[in-house]
Image (cartoon, rainbow, N blue to C red; front, side, top):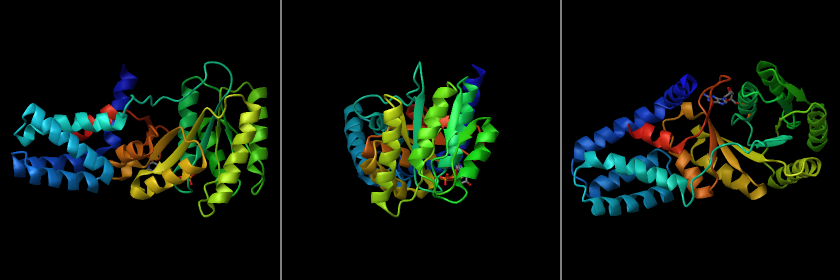
Length: 310
Ligand code: GDP
């Protein structure tokens, strides 16, 4: 369909930096080596590590590549691209294929909780997702749960009005759990389909962060059976290995069900997607490919990897 075509185009355009960097480096490598040998693998390893694929993931990939090259008796470096893509997708998927779709309930209220450090693009992503869900015919409501950062509530309201979606809020400094309680009641009264909740992103104090997230979650769990249906962690792709550190931290304090990797348009090191999934076993559900309302795309590992090596 037309919309699928534009989606693919957008996905491709948003990844120009990573793709150009990968493609030109691979072309260069293939041109210089011609035959697959130990030195070729060493340089390939370096190229992938530089692209933020992650050392462990790269080691595993190269081991598997070597076996596959032997098995298929591949000699020419030209013939190895397809195998690299195949193995990267395998590594991304792991033992069971990952379903990147959101757990939107067929009936009743779906609650999505957003977590992440300040500045990674959490508010922007909430706005984009609200817009997308609304376009899909859902009734959406936002909860301004970041009562800590100055301006966070207003910023969410700006996105809410852009998307044409209401925001439930209290004053700055108020109890986020109380905001969630209000928001859930409002969502029920208004027969909302999806409630998206913002939370504070201060990292300085892990214990406080954990307590706050637990309290917020407890309110949601108590008021809506089975909720939160998704806990989405926003990570900034341009921060590379730092994003991995943040992901590990959040995984320790709460049950993260999916990752939104923002600002993937702003980096040439898109390999971080693979590292995150491999090292944390949390699927990437969306990628942010720009600052505009429709710059959020569902993540498709196969399209992504084959796009890089095309
Ligand atoms: P928050 O503090 O996590 O809520 O972060 P914001 O939503 O305020 O975003 C921080 C900055 O990142 C803003 O300038 C956004 O426009 C920008 N941003 C967010 N997502 C993306 C993205 O996918 N691509 C680009 N290029 N910029 C983004």
